[in-house]
Length: 228
Image (cartoon, rainbow, N blue to C red; front, side, top):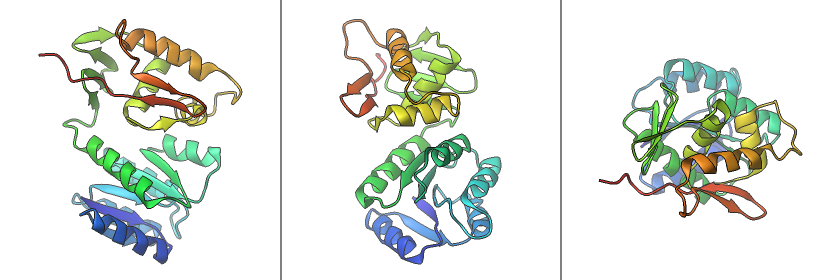
């Protein structure tokens, strides 16, 4: 893959370049916001790693401009900003994933691999894992060819899980991504809606697609491929 590193810290940029090269990726760095936007417009760029604190145009503005032209380009935000409000702003602005500094290179590479798998899907408006399909344009969900009726919030929750297969997602992450600013951190609304979602997408007697990870949150385990 060709990866754009939008990062003004040269030490971090070089570190990322070496780590990505070791995995067979080609990369190019941009240390300023307007340069990052310009490079991201190149169709050869397959993924962008974006710092939010860039000189000139900041990362959120870079994200907005890139999304206006390349709405399906995978974007991984890599930043020292760890406040919930920053995570919410980036995810609402179109970021696909969010990782805070300091970070482990192995985790970053795993997230790049996950985003690259999403980018390989034949239609950016359609997410499919196994026999479960979610269509963003028609707002329809199907499991093994059978329609699944979801509320708007259930649809958003399932979409978030399907975009992060195999990741352990905390309740706080889910609240920030799906409920945005309209939530009480002490609420059990996530648990309630996951119960709703399980009733609709799980198969009777089979393990749930949404596993509870005690003390950590929830993990979406993709279903098996559709039956022949």
